[in-house]
Length: 182
Image (cartoon, rainbow, N blue to C red):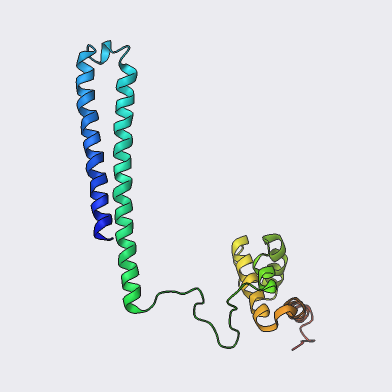
């Protein structure tokens, strides 16, 4: 966190503490003047609003402190990652064999936008062929998308034909163990 930001946060905390103190003083004066809590009929609403305002201020001050702590942690992580040179990039570590495209291509968009009801049957077929896939819909979708992205990267626009052929070969070899296709 920069020096300017830390000064601003300290000023915000100071103003919140000052406001809380002023409300506490006003509340302590309001109660006895109204004849105590038992006789506060008209002033009870003002007293109640003052207490709720004070509690909201305390909550706000707590959030400001948490935000400052999160900012400090984030800056430390950023500095450490920058020093180590391990800052992640949008391109990531790519295989030279099938480089991931820098822009979203139509075939890749189609695969990555597949819904669970589209990937579910494929996941069930992959599971039936021996793939270890958890029985949660999210896991099934992730495995299928990972499997299909490989076809997109290797075959481009013809990914669906090659994926269908591969899935057919996998399921055929499962039902006919003697008639295996390469």
